[in-house]
Image (tube, one colour):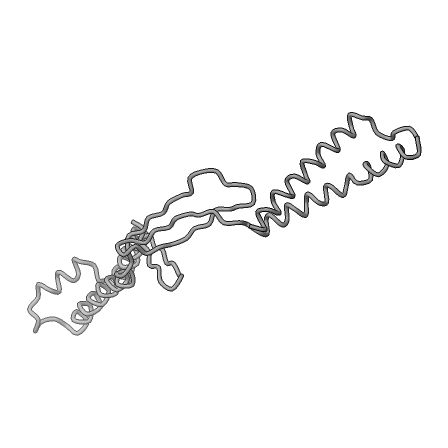
Length: 183
């Protein structure tokens, strides 16, 4: 089960099942390493307190400390609330990206997704489209010069038509993207 804490714009999300598994493994390892297994402690506890050695009393205290340390692991998460996460449903328009935002509703912490303008991405795309336009300027200029001079066209009408169509689409896309940036 995932739980979260959201305060002052900071989010902490924890998978309590993983925390519990790790805490149990750490506890078991510590108990084995220190020789504090249940059967050892049970045998000591069956003895009359006056007949227990200092080492046995120390083992009881060590085991109590291990148990307290185990409980302390979970105290850190006592004020965490159930966590719910929602994905973005729908299409992502040109120039936008989806970003998470968090909200503490009182009884739980919720992660929702919203569309935001990805200005850097839009600017990059505009610049790329402008470069592509620039890379075909010479074709338009050559055709124009040939027409003015009454010379043979350096490119076929089909090729020129394709270039002009692509340039028109690129300008249209630039205008759409610029509109997104300006909004």
